[in-house]
Image (tube, rainbow, N blue to C red; front, top):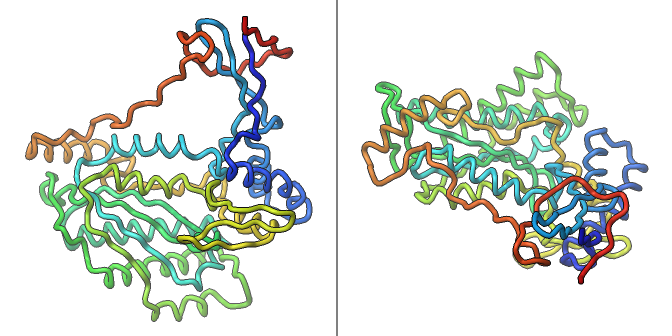
Length: 381
């Protein structure tokens, strides 16, 4: 077998090397010096060891000549900056195959800054209620105003470009859906709804959910303020909701949303400089920010989600239990517009091709978990 050693990480692009170096140098010490929840400690370990010898190795072996290339394993943690691209691509393909072939609105729900600390102290409960309130707001608006049930996908996003906490929800909403009276396809108007009443409805739903939850299982408060005193002024605040006109090109919108579904708090490409005490990274446009290593890791860990938490959810016609209704509505729509595909269409993105063997130029490199205990010597004859 012609065998190659693990790849030289010095050839990796500079940004990847800087981010990996930061975690490898500082993560273990940070975990030792801070009392971290087990979830954060596990994520920190995964990110620190990702694609290193500590994570183990695998081979890509030619099915013709036996040539092999050895690579370090990925951690595959959903919070790891190195492990999200392929998952994002697969998610986009899956959503395209499960969506109505129509335009989709893009709706964004944000919450006042006063709720950020409450979210940080109660992430599982707060983020769950946030996603539910956003979806229920859209369903209420479309059912009462438009008389239809659309397909809705909601995605949680928790950070700013500076990696500070900023919970908000991105939603895609089909520009049409199931007519609540006939069950057939019904198109939505070009205008979904006014943002002011939508924001008011969302505000009432989220605050009501938080209060109801607190009565059953008290939330952890970030300070001595009671939940009632924290929430009362927020009923008078103007909440912000954005609604963008429906885009006919579903793939562009789903690809855009995909950047949120599988993006983590910081990407490799945004790291500009790393020195002994600080790290500099890009925020918006040409601006940068410089913070200490500990502060960087602290901000990164603030966006680690609870184990098993679903930050991507589907409602209305896109809910898991609505497949039959979605198919019926999609078929009815396709009958009206014969030139458009049925909702059962497959992915429009070609699967990535396997690599041709660089040694024999004929075989294909295939993944295998088996790594010889004593690697065979390279034979280039």
